[in-house]
Length: 316
Image (cartoon, rainbow, N blue to C red):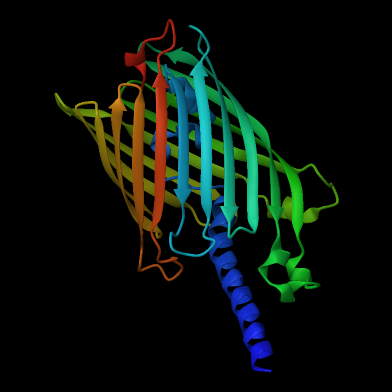
């Protein structure tokens, strides 16, 4: 009798933990739909496909994010992206693979291809437009939350294949940039047209980005940036960041995500072509919806020269 009561309690406890974690995790996902990044300024293709046109080098970036470290089954994201200019033209190509996981129950894995082209505006400025598109496989194994969820309509498993289309626009020169984008503008469940859940759940995400790079002294450059995010039906939110480049070798920065967290960032060129970075998000304890757990993000980036291109012409 005691054993049965203990087992029942453990099942109920696991179910409550899952439901609580699911609510905490899905709340921000409803507002942003896709993973968020603290080091987005070093992986801008993830927020705007046209940003490829600001880089004259072959760029390969690996990024891993652990959200709310310390929670069992907390969200985690892994991303691999690559973009490069095409020979000596004003065309740029890229690709990105992403795996997003919540609680070992919800997982979305997919990939996107991207294309961008730029035109000169005046003597020193450019205007670029980019598009991206791809597919992802989504599965939510809600029935694994607890053995007591069998037969519960709330915990029915969901599996589908999604199509995604996005776009972006950016105006830039050597000192500043301004862009607007919707990297997840159109989404559709193509695995089963009768599945209405994902069709009603999907909302396009709109982003506005601006920033600049300013020389403070011979060995110091300041790079502030702002990212504004909006999803229809949800309040807008924003990220404020400032990074200091020292001797073209070391980046040190800080950031603030509205009503969510503060962050510190650091990265260094361990070789002229390899950049390694780390960010630490400190939760905003004044926010009652905060998970009150820190988040970590690791980045490894390879920047390789392309024949016929000038590496010094890169904005980044």
